[in-house]
Image 1 (tube, rainbow, N blue to C red):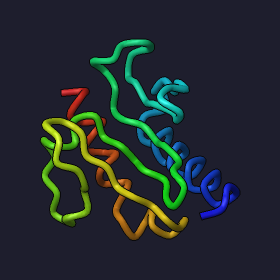
Image 2 (image 1 turned 45 degrees about the vertical axis):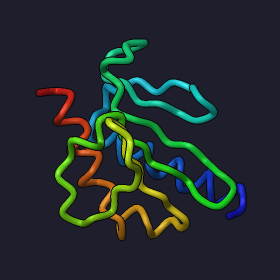
Image 3 (image 1 turned 120 degrees about the vertical axis):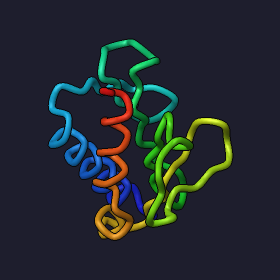
Image 4 (image 1 turned 180 degrees about the horizontal axis):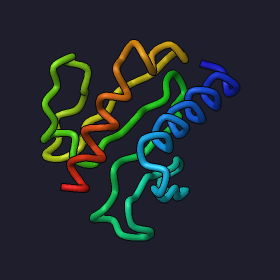
Length: 109
């Protein structure tokens, strides 16, 4: 996956997030961008987006608690789950809007 495509996927994911939560805070951290409902409050962290050699990962801080009707979440930790994106079309194909909505709603509840 080339750097231009990674950047396009990352930017599109952030745009989708900001459409759903315009007041979210973006912060560079862990080599990517994390999303928080309250600035510098790790307990309000929705997740983040991170670029790797062959994919971009949309990470969810509390993804293990999500209902996953599309069976797209990966990972086996106690809290986090992620979705691997390898093309711009994966954002729609892998229902990222659905999972972003779940992540935001979980923290606003």
